[in-house]
Length: 252
Image (cartoon, rainbow, N blue to C red; front, side, top):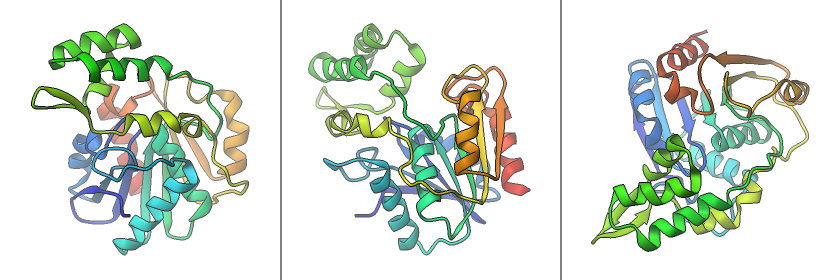
């Protein structure tokens, strides 16, 4: 099966991979600004957006999904950008399928195991699906579980209603069953020698100084860039600074 995508613009190809619980269209505003000079592919990864549901989800499979998509579109010599979970998929892809990848951009994630607990998020989503009658009510329910308005608003981007019944664009049960795989690090013990850029939020703790030696091992030609006054979503929290940074990388 081939991943669903939204494609806009003309020029050199850049593929953008969204984060956990997201979809390609989360990046549409960035894509529109890049589309005057680039052909931008916004992919929905498995169990997300309009792409296929699967009982299996791990980074090797998701890198393979991306490789199949690239072959189906006859894409060569492209740029790859991934945020959070998408960044891990992008790193996995670079390690397994480096041949046609021109530059790699990883947004606020490191090639390591994370020990996060998503239990409250899944409980909140289940509560929303069982009880929410409106978007406002869904927001109130989810806030009781996340206590984070940015995260709540992000999760609710995937909420829609069918005959007053709440639905989610992502496969929350499939993701829940595979959440430990999503916390893992890239699985291939090799390196990608191409240009790699890690764009990190200054206020985020997803990438730390302790991660740099391992980053250098896997991606020796790396550049770490910090976006000021931004957390885990620098493309949202400091959009123009982030965009300027990405455009500079693409045009170097």
